[in-house]
Image 1 (cartoon, rainbow, N blue to C red):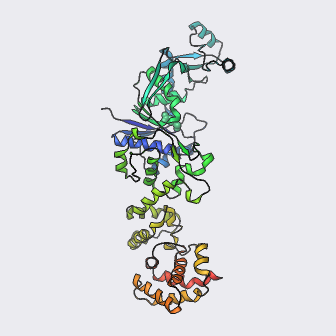
Image 2: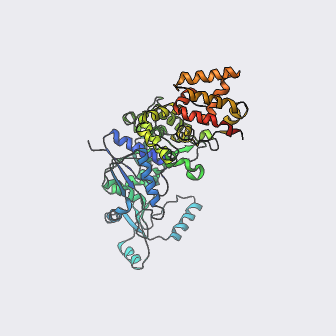
Image 3: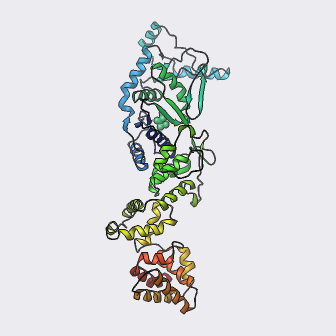
Length: 492
Ligand code: GLU
């Protein structure tokens, strides 16, 4: 069997977005599953729109996701000679012809066809020019494009789409399309095929938006004497209103960078992307890398559009809730050591990392993460909601401050009193911290909840979290005492 060779050929005219990343992932999965290769090809022929920033964004995005490639990045512009040679070859063998029709002529014909309700395609005026007519026009310096000569056949032309099944078009519906512009530049449609032939691509898995190209490209493969690869056209990713997702209408959330910068776990995001348009036919939601490589199949990619469930202006929906849900799952269940590495990067970025967390305090560090990860959604939460574990300059949220502290004037005396007793404890453990807090509440004849909720607010800044006594022990005697004593500051 020949090796499967897949490719991801983005045009570097923007950022790597959800749809592109999903395409890359599906190609990568199939390459891995079949022991084949994935090639990264940057399709930068549109020089005016391609940017270095975009190229870097694509490469960084793939790296963040862990989608590695076996060859590339190749750059389409480096193969310009192949493209012109292929065009020349088609011309020489009579599969293409020079067309001297001017834009004005074409426009006029189009108008006339519209008025007469006739087909709008090119009327093939130049298809059968004689050698002398061609020579004459060339001598007169009339510019020309190269058009592909669609074979004169009746019936249909098609291919077996791995996802959609048999796709066919009538020969009569296919226009003699342009393959080289009048400035001598081959069209993308041709470059794409020439590159895929040279790169020996066996499977082309891409979006349905390329299907109008595919039918023409099938003809190019034939004319270039190359075997037809397997095609699979994936449904597009739409929003809940069935509109194509785009940066213009949806903002940053369509860019992969957004997920990296928002503290998503790379594999969790791949897991989300995998399910955005594919399912094994059961309701499994979490896949390890190995499972996904094993279970993925092109045939089970959905035929209908994938829906990216994003509701603007709802903070709970800062992106598709399913992406958040899957991220939470990984955050809460992944190997703690691995999580430790990821959180380390966040802490470092915020200047909160302490080298001891990697050595003498490693056990403490990992236990602290394990304690707090249960309520977190992204890696960012460790430095925001969880800041009190790593720094003293954390924010006390307004809601718990008002509800749990400022409402009870007495706390200005009660918490410092508790601090004194905590300071004297020889064993600062779960039992002792709880016993002392309850004893104090009893002496003061107040509900223990008042002390406990106030403590949570003053010690962590948060309204909710893990068990209070676990928190105290984790944050440690010295800091707890200091924070409880400082309660008075909050009342001014
Ligand atoms: N460069 C094309 C794009 O970014 C990819 C075309 C293809 O997959 O053949 O849409």
